[in-house]
Image (tube, rainbow, N blue to C red):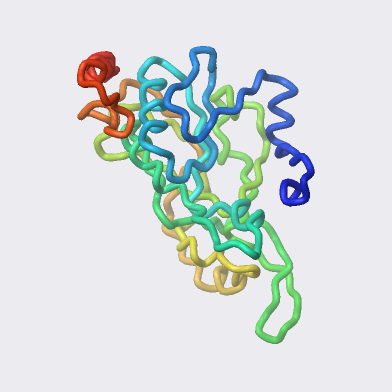
Length: 256
């Protein structure tokens, strides 16, 4: 909206806080190489990145680079910031599966974590039109054993709030180590992401239909180890030089 009015747009609060502590460099979503001076590459809600950018990320990781990925099957922020005059944008990061799977991680598609034990109370309308207090199983307050106390990222945290979070799990062919950092309780289930859509989700309906699976779901994880390239056939065609000699050189320098 600020840009439409000819005014400078303000960066998100999380970006402002990062800039207070770190040197932050903004990279284009169509970048074809990750600069050498990047210590940690932050990838937030990657939706339909071009192949050349995925390849750049792939090579950055294989070269020992560290990546912090935020991937969401139902990005509420994308829906809220969307102009009513524009068609809705896809809020799912499912298109990032190529790289996640190469790293031994799967974001469960189209599902959100519902947790009865961690549910936050909200005001919801009942069938009589009255406002009542009810636990919204898709808005979570994680604390206690939901937070890994032994990892330096989460070790000093006491509680975290999550809204419509997805579930991460290791793939069956993973060669990496998958260490959960944040988990739901065993009073949890996976809910179709569509049930959180719309201006007012059916909080009472979700609570009424809730059926815990007894399984704990991972909301954040540390992944480490040896991985293979997500591009075993060589650099993507749209990133291959037209000159045959240059193309051969690019393929030969690929980290596998």
